[in-house]
Length: 510
Image 1 (tube, one colour):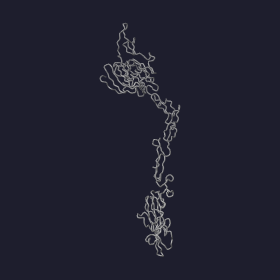
Image 2 (cartoon, rainbow, N blue to C red; image 1 turned 90 degrees about the vertical axis):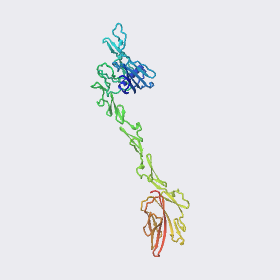
Image 3 (cartoon, rainbow, N blue to C red; image 1 turned 135 degrees about the horizontal axis):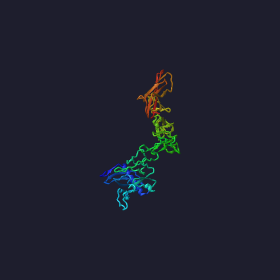
Image 4 (cartoon, helix red, strand yellow; image 1 turned 135 degrees about the vertical axis):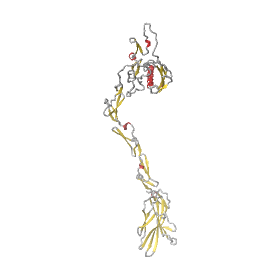
């Protein structure tokens, strides 16, 4: 592995393991009570020379005052146990920029032999001592020699050429027959602030290690491959959850949780009053055993989320909610009537009689006539020459010369009807006021029926009925002249009288 630097993935096992060693060793060296936490390896690259491999990476510390740190270290390619050989052999230098340079001294060292000895103890690198019996270097057990080898509640793990300080909850994996043991999926991950035991790096000769029996943390058990596997207490029924609880297996343990809608009260589960804890419902909350439901005020309904309340548009139910106009409002509705009408009850519109209430503007010489939705002002004396007024609504012509060809009398009448009235409809009856023997009366519409809206039906010799034959829209005024012609049979005499009817059609059908 020589040449230009090569980038490796940020989560590479080699770079992550190297990062954890560097941070762990740096923490132990500084010893200021504020350890670093590997939050993220932002970049990493590796470069080899003839005698060492250089790894460079960046990590984010937990202590903000240190800002971002950069760790660089290298190790010899021919080291036997390069995964742990650098422990206890770093030369550390901390600058204001937060850079830590870690270099490992070579394995071989020279020394001057003592004249009385054939062996030079300095030939053993740090972490090893010379065994005179076997005439070779052997590992020093720092954990047994140093009472305070690890601080902060960490446990000391002796290893070849040094030792490790790991959390007491860390799961230890020992390599078997010189091979690296992979971490199984069932082993719980160690939090970033608690470094893993580093894996063995490839690239150099390794000393075979004796097989050891694995020691698993509580909640794990060794399988046939001598790997720690999680114990599913929920499946093996080795939990202590009650009948009103649900067991959930976790890595190395389990938890007991209450059913939805319940909460822990000691060792038991009791109903959780959602209505008292928070505002789940927009209007009203009704608590039930293990659950709840929402209710809305009058005029509202539950939305699709079963929590919010939306207004009910009563006006959209039917066009008969109000006789004229329906006005929707939050939680309710109201009916309105047009000008000239007032609300009767909740939905009907009643005509306002302006002539009775005095809200008209007719003059003294005018009379007020109320119709549906309004009023009209008519002259109190409707008679025009050559007619003269004889009563409130009757005009007669006294001069035969002036009244030649004119009806001798005219009676003025007024009436009002609603618009869009169903037809045919009887609307007005004409009646003879005087009864004579040996006479015959006929009735006709003399004027005002050019469009054929009316028809006069003879009821008897003395009366006739005015019939509405077409639907009328308003507001509009119709003036219809109804004539009664009397034939005197014995005297061979003919006379007529006229009724001038003013029909006022209102603007609405009510």
